[in-house]
Length: 104
Image (cartoon, rainbow, N blue to C red; front, side):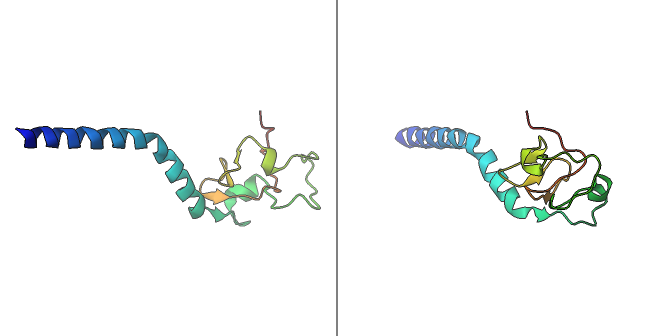
């Protein structure tokens, strides 16, 4: 009987530890995803369609407004360097594209 109680206690302890670790899983997966992101190539069809520029230096797009860079765009995730418009790729914080929208 004591072996059954011991097993039950061990199970409950492990279940409690696993439940406590669940909220940490997204943090682990985000950091793993950050390492996997490749730099957005200029030949990417989506990048061309949205007129993506890796740097705003010398940009001559009529829709560009001073101060609008990827780093302050609502689609940009600073922790990973990812942009919601270019899944699987990282973009430059000093870059710009025509879909830029001010961060709320």
